[in-house]
Amino acid sequence: MKASAPGKIILFGEHAVVYGRPAIAVPVTQVSAQAEVSESSRPGIWIDASDVGLHAELSTLPADRPLAALVHNLLAALGHKPYPDLQITISSTIPIASGMGSGAAVSVAVARAMASALGFPISDEQVSAFAYEIEKLHHGTPSGIDNTVVTHSRPVFFVRGRPIETLDVGAPFTIVIGDTGVPAPTKEAVSDVHKLWESDQARWDAVFDEVGKVVQSARERIATGAWMELGPLMIQNHRLLQQLTVSSPALDRLVAAALEAGALGAKLSGGGRGGNMIALAGEGTTHAIAAALKSAGSPRVIIAPVPASA
Image 1 (tube, one colour):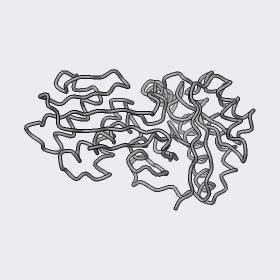
Image 2 (tube, rainbow, N blue to C red):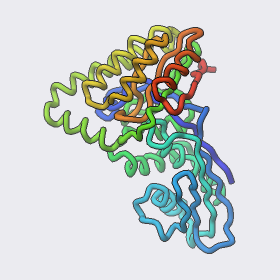
Image 3 (spheres, rainbow, N blue to C red):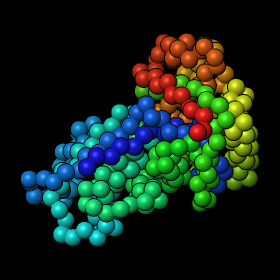
Image 4 (tube, helix red, strand yellow):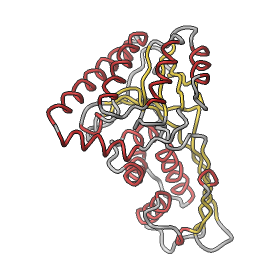
């Protein structure tokens, strides 16, 4: 049985979302993770993930290794004993450690493929819950936005601990994603922001509140189709993330290059200190922005249209 899951990108609200403020994220279908689960002629459960150099039988892997933990959790939840002999093959075109939900997408694809192969129905809510538990191993204290967007494969307005809200998109727009080529140390960045917050909660809560206001304004503009007004909000969000110490020279360089090439706005996306930034392309500027990002050192650029809601 085969299953796939898209990547994702956060448009607004990263880091503040961990502290109860809203965030907006959209799926990126130009990249995806794929999982195939089939019967194996070899005893045991074999995991083949060539993208990360993993070729091993489940029992030989540390229980807290994300992929091993996911498979153990699934088998326990599905009540499948004795364990069947299986081959799990995983591949992905989503850049790893770049803020595009690679870990969540792999978890979602594997969960769906395994449940299908073993003949167990599984709901989106269950898939998202499995992926969230594995996100904890990847990121420490994740917000839950990655597994939510990737599982449901639709734009979302997300507040931690609240029911999912689908984000209405009034008119299509295009995001250009530029990879710094530097792995994003998300767990470290989240931990450092938490230390900042603990050192002066009033100060940093005020910053999170400002981020929250930006997100609410962005939601209104996206819903009404006024996407060209998102640019200044992106720039403001990036400046607030700089205050939170999660930008980097590489991210700032790509943001500046995008703006110079005609982007309406640009900001880092995800955990920061590496990974990706995003730029909002105005009419006729998409390819100029992409070329500028490549010239500024981005090894990988993705043009990601955000379609209007059906």
